[in-house]
Length: 223
Ligand code: DX5
Ligand code: ZN
Image (cartoon, rainbow, N blue to C red; front, side):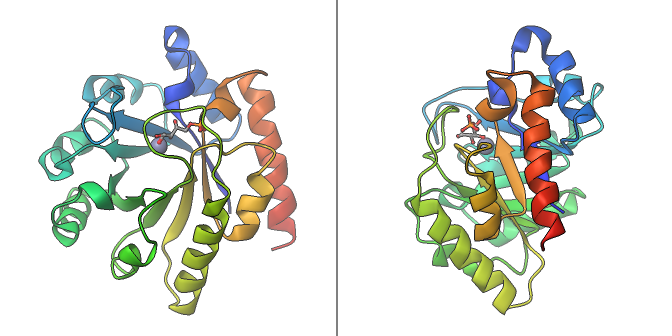
């Protein structure tokens, strides 16, 4: 089953609760929450208080993407404010195994993310221990960028490794994902699709999401 994870970064914060509920009603099972504090990436987004308050609005899986240094310092707090899964960056982690243990110890799913320029092989040894890999298909730090076509090959390589080793880790793709490329990304081997602009911009949220759902159904039918 394919999963859509709308990225909050592209939402209209004036009517955030309403927009989140609309994504949930339209079938998005995850909510992707990008945390940036101006160090690992230049931008600043939001953190615990926001997550805590939207937790009351939504029953979705809160998929927290930490684009921060020293992620180990904040795992407990993110767990306490309502995260269901925490993904950290390989490039920002001091002790990957310890971090995975810490996240699992809080009862959450653990994800590891990799920037476009980091060789994919660097995460292979961690795959038996994580629940998902977040493949960045743009440089992390901002919404609205274009999908980097090199990501297709990276997703395929990851899929082959996971299948060859009979692992159950999910592949999530983040950055520039939209209705135009979602089928191709599915074909490359992804399971979870982060989409900010493609969910919250242009047409209504429910229209946007129904296009993803159509693609998912079509591909699930031929799996
Ligand atoms: C980028 C973030 C993404 C971003 C995706 O650093 O990790 O989650 O919000 O936005 P779009 O879908 O607009 O590329
Ligand atoms: Zn993200």
